[in-house]
Length: 487
Image: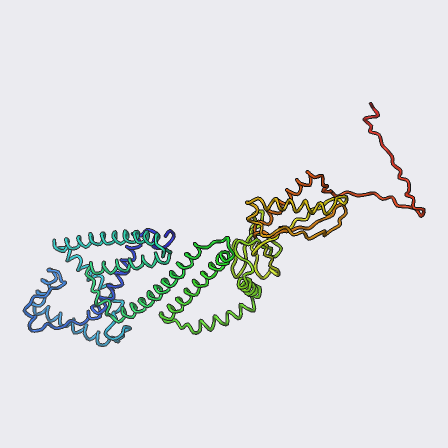
């Protein structure tokens, strides 16, 4: 996965982590040996005649033999050794390590020195050089195999139903730990000493528990995530249940993810020695403080919860919220995102929503209110409207979206210049506006064919009447066009 820690220069990552792990585990395995550097056991009777391997060079052995053979030098050496023993007895005996377990950090340089001397001695012989070269070759082969296996596993997981960044990361961690274990065996590390030391057992126990918690959490999440993805892929957003699930599944997915992460974090914190009881109590107090201080946020959450629970709107509905109308693109418990007819995206918090108008729930009504002149016969106009509606029902492309016959609701207005007739018919949710436009177009064409007047606004001038019922004369002054006068 791009951008993750395991995808950035995998060779450097494996090399650095391998060296760090090798150093740490070698230090653990060398603890008992370093703790016993001050005491040298006396050889038994059976071992006295057997030549013992020593880390002294031949020149140092020759000088030691010469010192022991010379009486004066031997006495001087014994005197220096007694002085050192007296100083050691007078020094305070302090130890920060537990009995029989730890080693002192001051012994680390000497341990590195001994390891370096051991490596130089092994490389001084042809057999040691060959063994070292073979270890290097097997190390390179093992690193290449682990990187190739990691890439192959990533491809297989990407093509499977359980593909996710968490699964790929966990699989790479497992491959890395297996690679480190094999490399330690290859370079002769004492695995039994490492694993059986008290410190390693405590650390390994905690690490094993943490890995088990992470693995179980990942497994539970993958099961739920796979179920959500399968259901989401099979949704039919053209139906009401499909839009309902399209709205709720992302919200449920986020809730499950937050719960799994919270439980895993609490278990991990408890394992590493953190007392989670004060944290839980503090979280409760913090929740009360947030509830009093962020009342708008609490109102958003409560309103959003009830809107989602009551199935008031779903993704894809055309709604009017907070003074904005548009199609719902996404909604959660905090806010709703709608896009209007001009493409503008409006994010509306639930706290600002007082009324929810869903214009596409279940069905719609195409309402058309044609107006005709006062001189027209209303009964004739109504019959013409019914004929146009019947013509639309005969069109199969339109009839599939018309769910009922035409309803004539009668005259609803005697306007200044027109008589308005209200009509409507039931439609599928999103086709009401299209059918309204098409119905108006057909009415306009039929009215023009039959000579039915669709009036436009005009005014009638009234001069008034006197007491005898006679209208006052209208004085009209006609101004001749100046251009005509010049002609």
